[in-house]
Image (cartoon, rainbow, N blue to C red; front, top):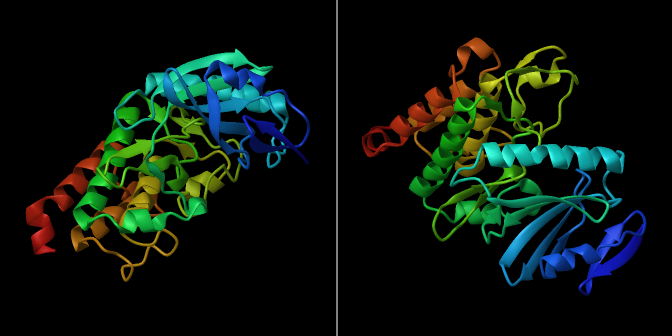
Length: 280
C-alpha cells in the first residue's frame, strides 16, 4: 500500500495513480478510499458547487478484482442513474472517461449514510416514529418506480440509503448493479449483506425479480423501525400493522410475499395511516 495525496488529503492505494484530473471539478475536501467495489470516491468543491465523484481506474486497497472490470462496471452503471432519475435518487451530473478510467459525478448531499458500516444509526433513532415510517415509504415508492420501469435491485442494503435528519428526506445512492429484469441468479451466493438477502440470492438459477426486492425492502423497514439483524418484534418501534407488512415481505417462500413492490408500498402506506397507527 502507498499513501498519496489529493489537495493535501491522504489517499491510500495499492500503487501510484495520478489523481490530478480531479481539479477539473475543484478542490477535494473528502476522500473515501476503503470501498471494496474498486471505486475511489471524493467530495470536490469548485465553481459549480460541491459534487461527489465516484472514480474507477485507480488500484484501490480493498478491491481484489481487475481495475478494468471496475471501470466497465462503473461505466455501465451510468445508465441506472439516468433511467431511474427520481427525487429520492442522488442526481447524476455527468459520466466521463478521465484519468485513464471513468468517473460518475453526482450532486453532493449532506444527508447521513444509514449503513451499519458508518455507525450512524443514532441519526435514524433521532427521528420520530412517523418520520421513520415515512422514510421507509420513500424507499418503497422509489423502488416501485424502478420496478414499473422494468428494473431489478441488485445488492440493495442499508448502505444504499442516506437520510436528511432535519427534513426526513431519503437519498438513495450506490445503485450501480441494478439491472433490467427479471433476471436469474448466475452466481450462487450473490453480492449483498446477509441481513437483506432473500433465499433465492443464494440459489444458482433462481429467479431474481421484484419479488426478490420485496424481501430486501421488508428488511429495510427494520433498519428504520427495529433491528435489521434480528428482525425481532421486541426491537420494533412501529405498529403491529407495520410489523406484519414487513414480515410478509420477508417470507422465505416467494409465493407468500407481497406480489410486487407496488403492493408492498401500498400496504405500508395503509399500515402507516393515522387510523392504522392508533388501532395497532
